[in-house]
Length: 302
Image (cartoon, rainbow, N blue to C red):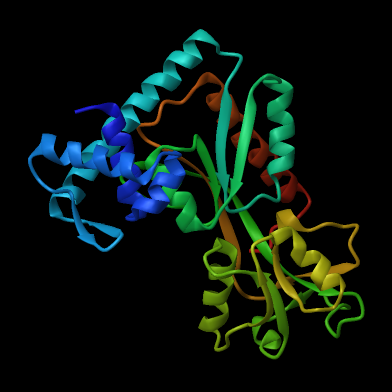
């Protein structure tokens, strides 16, 4: 059994399509098919059921996939550990986030301490983030909501109140707070389903008897403030994402525990480099300072 065979098998197993897998691997379909066939011959069992051009993992393939992922995961961790030992001041920190409003400040602090460490950030839905996390393809995730799992370490770092953003001139703009029931006839702008904040506020609104009516649903949370300013709709925006320079009024929600938990996630078995450990310390310190500031200035809304 060869390492290349395992890599090709994982690509096909994840896409269940030879053409797509070949494209992602930058190899020809015939080369990919022959490699998978040799692997099946070595194992003595078929790993896929063939349905036209599509392949579907069978019972043997599903069982072998877990072992193959673990084997490649451990090899990748070994590679990262050696790289860290040989060049501790170099490397790339892989990050995934479902919430990015506070990330620039965190990365700024990290770059001060580790100027030669690169970082790569992906803004993802909760489902997409968990997939990369379980594959061991990211060092850390900043997630809302927190995620539980056998292979996932989860540390809640901040409780972030969710506010109602309305444009200047709106009927509620002269208020400091609002009840959810008063919003049932409003039009909203928000992110798509699958993002933690969207799923949370939808569930809370439904618990008081209405479903928010969205006129815009996107995948860029930072754009919501611009749409609110343009009077396209109002929005639920976490307190960490508000901007005092905008022509927007932020209202707290009355009598509801409407807040998101922000968590730092990592894979239990993934090798954590020295740079990654420092990043975790910076994240915890940053949110700890934020919590103290909130408490001192009376900015808790719960």
